[in-house]
Amino acid sequence: MKKYLIAEECLDLAWRVCERKNTYGRIKAKGDPPSQYFLKEGDEPVFINPLRDVGFKILFGNSGQHSSGANSNDKSVLKKGDLLKEMLNSFFGPKIPAITQVRFKNVEAPGATIHNRKVVYDLCFSDGSKREFIVEMQNQKISFLFNRMHNYLSRAHSLVMEKGASFDHNQTPLVGVLIANCIIHQDTRVPCISMAEFADLENGVVVTDLSKIMTIELPKFNKNLNELKDNKDVFLFLLRNLGKLKKIPPQLDTDLFRPLFEHAKIANLKKEDFMLFDEDRTWERKRQLELETALDDAVMETTMEVTKQVTRQVTEQVTRQVTRQVTEQVSQIKTRTFIEALLTKGLLSDEDIAEVTQVSVAFVQKVKEELSLT
Image: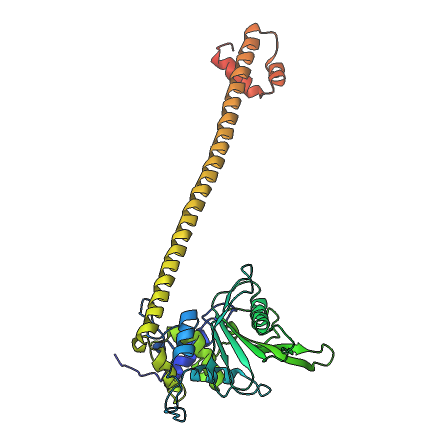
């Protein structure tokens, strides 16, 4: 038997032609990368999953060294916040100034009273240019997700309002970045990456830059490896697929993205990061087990209920059928007895008896034969 070597490009093309079309809300989308880069079912993960809060915070919040005088000018050293800076800058359009540095801040925003809930952001930082950013990763769909992000910005704004005449409401502008593995805007005209801000309805002129909300809807991104054109595409691809990869695709083995893969590799995690990852993984497995158990219980309860209903319906149907048959048999017995009495007296003809008892003449004659009255 001859063996043929098929070029990788041909395999990828065949795979892309035969694959399913994308639907919003599903991780498997049009143009998923070739299988040689993906984990198989049952394989242990190689890279952390940035779609989960812990994975996102480890990769974009903890990766790299603290910036210091010794490494501040060293481009070869990955510093904390560099990956986050590169990713967000790739998402920004030409109208939004690039982030030049990342200075992480406290992620907790306490309530003003015991009746107000505390807010904990995924990441919060200033960029050194009188802007602050709140970044949220949302893996599961929840109601009013955009409103939630707006409330986060409102809470951050309210915390800087101090008493006294010195506060002039000229606070630092805030940019909320909401990365969601679900659809936020149901209007299909809204692209994968969009920016909302306060603007005049008539002419679209922005009236204040105090608050902006950028949304990144990952289900709307469906490019495969061979279709990635720029850093924006690569970051979107990795957000969706990094946790499912088993090795670095050659297209992404670049100076910019190589450090991301190195810090995302589970085997390379720092002790404290690995403990967070392992705790989150254990919690997720427990949650999955609880969901499966709940599903099994629901299926069992539903099966039992359906069985009861079917049994009740069958019992009622059989009871009605038996009752009808018994009634018919009793009616036939009474009719036969009445016919026998009429035949014995001999007062009516066979035709008259058949008309009175509403049976056929043949039936009357059969009963007559059995009585030996012919």
